[in-house]
Length: 282
Ligand code: ADE
Image 1: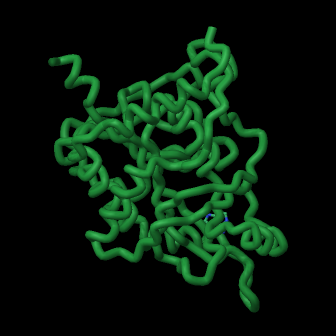
Image 2 (image 1 turned 120 degrees about the vertical axis):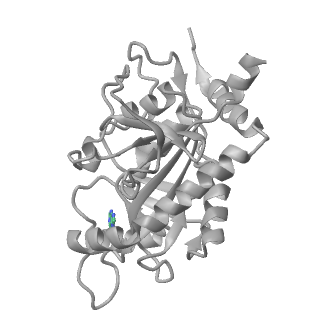
């Protein structure tokens, strides 16, 4: 019985960090300085219970925001969350909008991505010692966990926040923003949003067999609109600060929704998908 209980024990990782600074949020809060076969995550993991549900909070860019998007150790971040027992990861991300009707301040639960990053470590299957063995060709449709997406959407709707149920994020390498021609091209490609971190995060979470979903906060219109200047850091930071509490609220309610879900077959499916995608395991 004990083993069965452990098998279905859920722990939710929260990636993003900003907006979760309420010191009374966690019960039995501890700081866990984790090391992984892939190096150190961006910061310590804050662990404890949120309304009775085990959770682990990690600041993607470090609590001092010391890592730029191309320098974040995405592998260590995801592995660390998995290592402490997370079955799910819910993420927040600041994004620019590529379409008129996704407005600054809106929330979007991402459902797909276009990868424009380069040079980032985007697989655990590279024969790192202590890492998994074999060659992994993981399907990316769907890119995000539908159960976790639904939990975020349900939470946002219950709160009455304006939330779009779908969105394709074009993930650029950064640290610079897009040129106008790039921004127009991203629109033509069918992108709805642009950011710098969803890849490889979503890919690695999938490789790790985790349930992963992300709520994007629209901070700006990038630079594609006529008669407007380019996005700026001050604009992004101000819009993010103003609305991040909404994204955090949605995640906190989604944690409860996922914890209450009795059917765990989707978690098994995530793991089975990975094992069926790995060749040459020995
Ligand atoms: N993050 C927030 N806004 C962005 C933009 N316009 N481009 C890339 N990343 C972003």
